[in-house]
Image: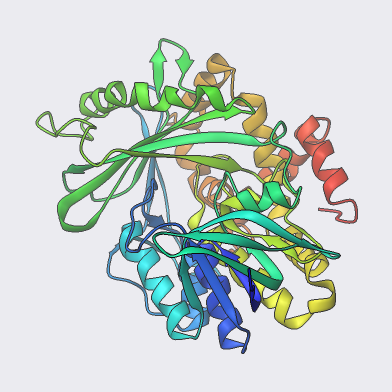
Length: 427
């Protein structure tokens, strides 16, 4: 089989892969983007692009796709109390997010990458191709067109939580990963502000995850439920089974109309790999971005903004320092994400499987005494917006929360894993 050679092979055409391909193509690199799906395609997601994601678009001069601007966010505690987390512009990001379906958003980013010169290949990356330097490509099975061998100087894995690239490159220890599973549905109901709901399936026994109801286009709400499973992927179906009861919970608290349809229409689920734990983001000439690298917020499940930023960072490392791209990329991720992920991932690991502790904590932080006083800082910390936040009390609260969380979580196995994986980082 005569191979086709490109400078960079990107496996996965979602936000992380498309942004990486866009940056690389603009720099003059030859780029092939392999994806098994035909676009536009749907994805299980909350369809909410955070402020940092919008900033990446602005930095790259990419027009924001049509959607609905979103500002403040409500968190509803297990007892129904709500705390409004304010949205404010930072020094490095706008004071808003945007609700836009993944079918629309991913297609827009893909078109931007192709317009810049990247090449799309529809097919599934299968048998790996190896060279003296390690993984260097794949045999790609194309629908109705046979197998095509693609080799490259660099391979970027942008192929999601269950990344084939990560496995073939030996960059993931699945027994250490903090897995999650999320399922979402679309419901015909307008929503003014997004809500993340902490939910008790029984008195004092919190669901081991989070639920949400987010605004969408044309009066359609995105409603979903995510469950943390630690290293046990067999329990992911819990979110699917619990979704009808979660709909009832939202109705009882006035977030869904009694007449709103159940969770059957447009239901879709997918795995999450959270908090960077168990995955080395780069080695040699293989770099992982987005969900493949575990860049999903361990406390509230956001991943689009992190995916876009990591795609840009990986591409910049390849273009700027090709001889040490993996080192430069790991250093960039450590600077951007390690201060938050090492404490948030440790907190996630400690709380999943402790439903009573989660209930107590959820009720405490949404109480009328505590919640409003912490709201500004909580929003910065919880949404990973501390870096680049504007000076003021919220930043002070978020900084103190991060320092306290690091001290509390320092003895945990998750923190020890980060110390081993990132030995030169003092963060």
